Length: 204
Length: 204
Image (cartoon, rainbow over all chains, first blue to last red; front, top):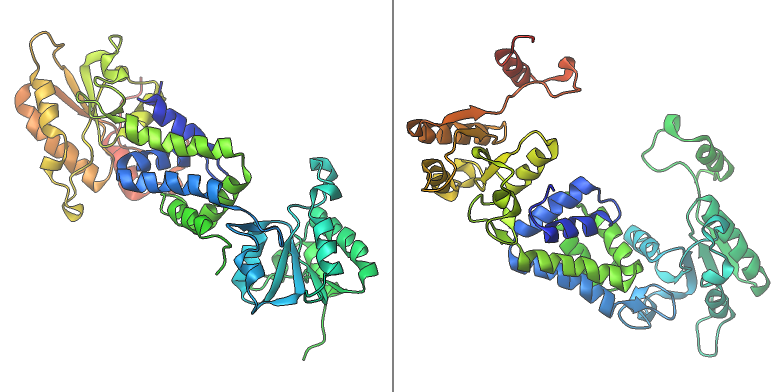
């Protein structure tokens, strides 16, 4: 046996199950938690419990939220006529961080992936169509931005959703795929560079 | 605001305080915990609580333990006449993993570091001297291996402890410093290489 306590061993096992945490890091964190004040460790444990107990989903956009509608859906300053469709709640964070979007979100909860067994019925597509179809007293949706990942699954999801939206007479756009800002063309993969050429724009 | 829930934000803050966890990783882990089963998240929270509630110190060796003496100190198959002195409990894990040591341990709880304000009184040195001095009915200590880190703090701690042990007529050794196994001389720093030359041994 390497560890002097089975509780320590159990904590390391549990930490090592988290994403981006290898066994070595799990060990370092466990020893840190042993060393740190009881209060700090308890605060972390309570934060984990709180997140599971208090956080649910916003019925409107599908993002994680404490109440429904969530603060983003309830914010009247945000343009309700533009929806940004993303795969996961974490993507909302990424788009929000840009500060370049002031509309509303719609979280699909994943992307079409036959290999992973994710079909259309697993995504919040019906809810998206309902939002676009509109309801009395609601701001009509003018544009749907498809911001799914630039992966095979994300692209097919975007294509699938855009076809379903076509009859609704709403503008459907897709975020640009191209060379990342600050990168070198030399190191760009050919798919990305091909997309960048294809998506070229006139200089202002 | 980037996150739709203050509980989520708090969890990310708490996770980001852990060693080796940046903000990005904290975010990934928090979203993973939101997505995972309630049971898995609770198991992690409980493991953290359990470690703080059940794990204390072994009065003998100073390692983390659920009871005192700890399993390593209570193991009669281990040679009580050889003590391996380390800085931290995590170092016991490292030495144990080698499988090359079958004696007992003594954890100092740190290393001398005037800059960090760690003096001799903060280390379990008195306890070490008491163990070496021995007690009736106890196996006398023949050798003390100083396995503190090969850093400035670790080296001065080793020197300090060795001087205190000198009058006790016990063999005091220091782990070898040299080029790490599997490394290239080309990339060895000069201090390490100098130590490796100094510590050279006759070929068998």
